[in-house]
Image (cartoon, rainbow, N blue to C red):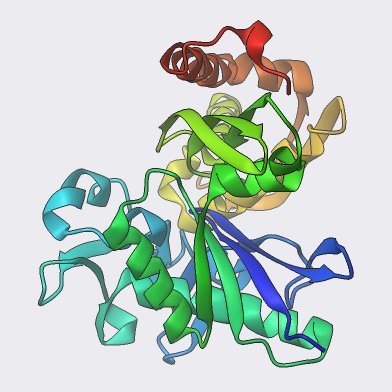
Length: 334
């Protein structure tokens, strides 16, 4: 029996692993039973390394020891990422080669982005091995179309550290086009609208006679689902402040709970018209020393209003990609 090869999407915010079972691709659940694994790694005081959801829960409580969005720094020089470094809560430094790396106090050393990626890849590999019941050593990993050779090589190195032979680094829009079957169609143009957790990418591809050609790509590396979570969070903080006069921004534990509740509300509103956000004992009233609870209803219509400008930004990027490809919306088949 041929050895299984993993297909891995190592994302900025979340990662996914799949494998072919017969002629079907199956997305494999992780150790927590979820199909999405947060691309987050956290080091505890006890030198334990947490990966995925357990690490994500520590992002606000222990910001300097929790590395998220490491994909933004992989294969890049420290000089290139000074602006990016200002956006994260951990310390980005230059390693001995001048590459971007992370100073993680609990790790007791400087950690390279490839090492962070390797921890995530190892978790996915172990989940796949447990699911299939056999050892897996080979993988194909997807990267953004704009990744340069250094970023691609660094992603390969992350795979190697995780014990994987990376057979191929595949562009994300090409992977989407293959899943759609574009290589088997003739003279078809598709637009891939990839609204990720932390980045947004648009690609226009044309398929014909087994060949996929990228006609145009465009995007915004700081636009994604996390922005929607932030909007919900800000709304909750503001509503609570109006009612109680208390600003929850100063409370790390409350912020972590708000972040998780905002993400959950966003997910629920993708299939429901309204959701209830319920956070008991969110904080203590300093005047009465009594616990305070946060309870709010959020409708899909209200959320759409809150994020209209974000969606408008994505449509501007779609228009730019169409212009670059010298195509009109009518020219797109799917």
